[in-house]
Length: 231
Image 1: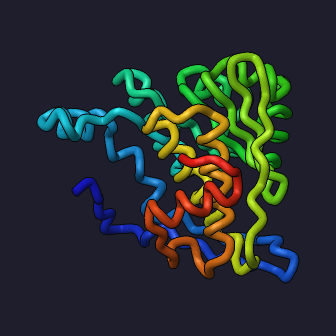
Image 2 (image 1 turned 90 degrees about the vertical axis):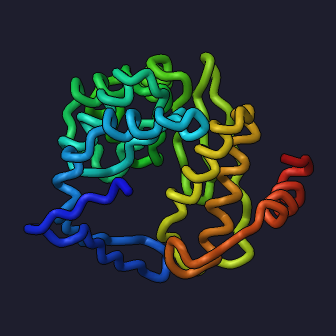
């Protein structure tokens, strides 16, 4: 296991209040998450190299302790492991030059529309210019779908209308689950983005971020129904 216990700290805790229009206010205590830098990417890579089938092929750096995010990005880059930089709520902890340094060593960048605006403000670059520094930039736009910038172009990913709206908590994470699956399995961006969009739509119909299960066959059927072609 790679779970580290920090004796003097509580586990990170988030209390999220959602109104009837699905606007959210979050109260967050980082706790032990602030010590995430104690976990070294190099140690995980070395352990997994013992089994070629389990070798680390891909990574993601998501919201975490500031030092942990900084060090893990650099450690993944030094190990030659492609990764998604997904700063999320951690983005405000970095200034413009720091953000550009992390973007430049990442393979992919994922933000929502609000984070994208903040990224542009802090770096002084448009999203199109930021996208030139990575293989792809993914910008999620909630109910409006997503935009994916790659190879000098931008494609619009359509949203998948939800059968009902129960709880938006975790929709961004579900989207990223689809994104990572598509990347790992060599899907093109049009397909990867649509799978990610579908996963967010499925999640919003359930209460809580992890209280639902879907089989691959069920996901494939919903994908074909939504987009007219098979995975």
